[in-house]
Image (cartoon, rainbow, N blue to C red; front, side, top):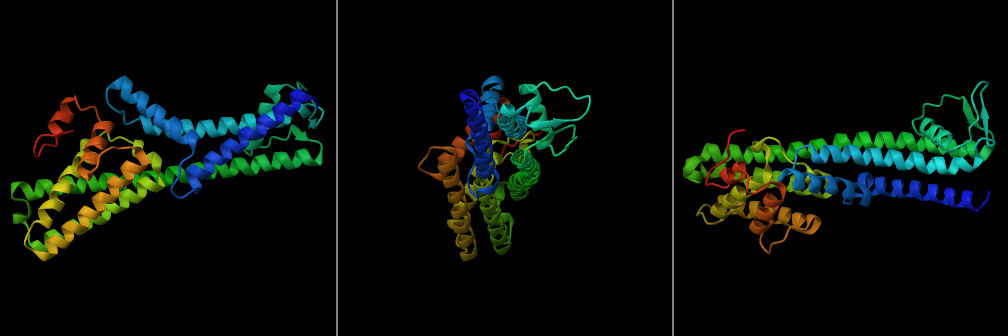
Length: 306
């Protein structure tokens, strides 16, 4: 191989290493996210916010699809650059198959190998190339299963977040202006403890699935940020009550909210010394504050109809 072939091979290996590293940090590392994944999803999220004046619910799903496409593209190009110096003499061609030996042919071999299709009209001749092609097939199968698992794990986390927002909204509507006075103290304490557990689950989801933060809700009832202010109000009222069960439940809810605020502050850069200020920053970043719905949502007791 000449110098250009060596450079191409090293570049291809670098692209493969970059892809594997990003997949590892995004899908396998417990509380991390790969730089490519974070950059693509956050970039599309910010672009949507800039173009629309508010975040589009499609920004994060499109971002996840773009991440998967980027992983596949980098893998295909990386392996193709490794094959290119050995095209066509390093491969055996079936009868009638033209031997171009160029980059497009190397990309084709790489795509067939990564997708594990294996048509068989172009196969490696030397043992080490056979090993490389087999390694790419294993990588492709792993990438496919990993991305499917990523999707299947992300959407349950989003469902838990939506469910929490719905529960808070239902609690507000059911309690009305009387608040805790409309409920038996023991029942109210149990509900607050349940809310605290659900908020803790959302905090864990945000740490484990960073990309779920960039999903914005199309339906206002499932939109969590404004509901967190009401949860904070409930916790404060419970702590100030005379009932010991409510006081304990209020402290538990306060602790869960503080943990969530710390995740938002540490992982996603929301400023604010208090949890309330962090939640205000969270709401402002996820929705354009000048929109009619946003103004209605910030009125006392106001969650506009979808």
